[in-house]
Each structure stands twice: as C-alpha cells, then as structure tokens.
Length: 367
Image (cartoon, rainbow, N blue to C red; front, side, top):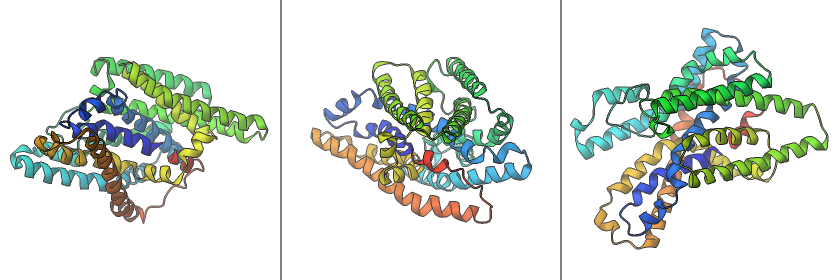
C-alpha cells in the first residue's frame, strides 16, 4: 500500500508538469481526487507510527540511552543518505537555474539538518516534499519516549479512547494553525500534524496486536471469516477515500479513513490483501521512499520544457507525457533504492545489532 500512496502523491504534483498542453491539462485537473493527493502524506505519518511500533515497541519498553541511540541511528541510516543526495541535487539545480544568490544559507543548513519544518519556514524550499521528512525526523526523536509511556497500557479500550483524543487534538490543531485544512500544516506547522498522526499509528498497532492475538488463540472458521470481512472493509474504506476526495472539500475526513484502512489491512486476509502482496506491489513499497523524494525533480524537468513546445502537442501526447513522467519516477526510484538507499543503510548499520523484527512487520510493510 505504501507504493500506491507514494504514486498518488506523485500524481498530485506531476499534474503540474502537463500545464500548457491544450485541453489535456484542463482535463487532468478536472479529476478532483487528484487534487487531494497531498493527503496521502497523512497516510504515511500514521503508517510510520504503526510500523515503528511493530518493530520497536517491545524494544522501547525499557528506557535506556543505548536503546534510544540505537533507535535514532537506525532512523538516520534509513532516511539521511537519500535525503543528503536530494538536497545536493536541489542545490545544484536551483543554483544553475536561478543563480547562487537565490539560495539561502539558512535554508540549506535547515534542510541538511532536517529541521526546516519545525515551526519556521526557510525559503526557498529545496527538495520540497522533504518537509514531511523533517516532520518525521522530529517525531522519531520523541517516539521512543512515547512508546515507553504507552507501552504498559495494553487494554483495547485505552487505545480506542487515545485514538479518539488524538483525532480531536488534530482537529483542534488544524483549526487553530491550518485554518481548518491539513494542507496548510506543512513547513511551518507540519511537525504537530505528524506527531499526532504517528501517535495514532502506535495505538492502531496496539489494537491490531490485540486482535491478532485473539485470532491466534482460536482456530475455527469464524476467525477466517473475520479476516475476510476486514479485507472487504479495507476495499470499502479505500473506495470511500476517493468518494471523500471527489464529493467533499474537507481534509479531516481522510485521517480516520486512512487509520481504518491501515488497521483493516493489518488483520485482513482476502483478495485485496492478496493483490497488495504481489511482487510488483512489494517492489513499489520498497521504493516508495525514493518515489516520494525524487518525483519533485521530474516535475521540475517537465516544467522546464518550453510552453511553446507543449502548446503544439495533441491531447493524447499529454496522456503519454504524464505516463512517461510516472515511469521515469519509478525507474529512478528503483535505481535509487538499489544504489543509494540499500547500500548506505547496510553500511551504516553493519556494526549495529539490529532488532529482530516481529513476524507481522513484513506483512504490513508489503501492504
């Protein structure tokens, strides 16, 4: 599911690369579901909390400096290598296009340290999707403490209430700082949005773990039917997300739907889950981080094509243009995963004793 979400974010931005192609640009922007693609970032925030609770929940039950340092280093190894590459590319591109004076030293330093979305806007944006990565980095720094605090509470009612409280806090936060929309909670106010949604993901993991433990204790046909039911619910929720995108203009509806989708997929067995576990979907999930971090550069290249050239293109060429942009993003992301992400992560964590992943982590990762 991560790969699908990353491509939907990419589609939201890459549409702007076809502006100027007669008729096609108006046609593609008429699809309202594409105009809400920025909300899939919230899906990633919630999923991050879910997966990290899977992987580190038991590890963080005992608070120690060694454990905290290990967690932070694992996160650095995961996100920083590709981030540094994209910052370097952005500096090179923007410096050549607009001149060195366009770049701000404060913006470069803030981007390198991944603090450019911690309450202050640092213009100009470099790799603009990285605002959410900055938010996640801030959430990572406090997540071990949060896992330690909520870890002892295992009752489902506690986490149901906690999710409700966190949703209420997010609603208040969006109204207070985002004028009622999540899209305004980015560079300046995105950190609070991310922390609340990561915390929601942690509680979803606890609820999923309780349900799966109950399922494991029973082996009758009813349990299989329940898993199939959750698979069907996941399909309905996934479809409901696009209905909300098309027929409403309110961002907040997406958050409980995204949370419900993640929870259902974590306990589901059925055709939808089977589809999301196919090799191509697993591959898209593996390269989803690169898709998210690199698609902005493909957008910039598309926007650099002269408008006079685009104006001569027929409608069908616009469709091929947009498809080619997505395929280029996928190809570059695959190379990035193979040549940057995976080798750098292995090199940085070679001497670090890894935490044995729980049995469900691979399951949810593919979805």
